Length: 111
Image: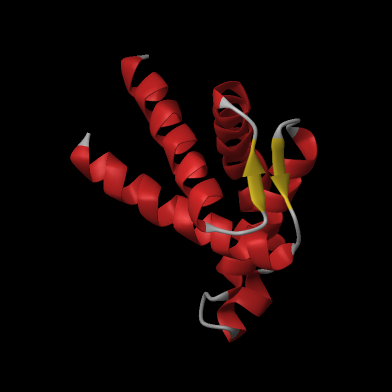
């Protein structure tokens, strides 16, 4: 249980970092960040595998780069579901997903 809570806090911090770095991402407080982290974790658990399976031919042709597009689409989906977390456009979602992934990875290394 402690590991799950720590992971959600790390993901919330990663989303906050993305909102500071990427123009077009607005995060209105701590609770939207934590709620977005929970919804993002659920979307990555349940929605992402389906999207990866459905787009497998495109992913293979692009040598896996299409996964970045899937990550951006999931980021956009989460922004539509969580009040207080806004992503303005696909470009912001793409860079936000990338920054969130990198910061989350780095924070998981530290903790």
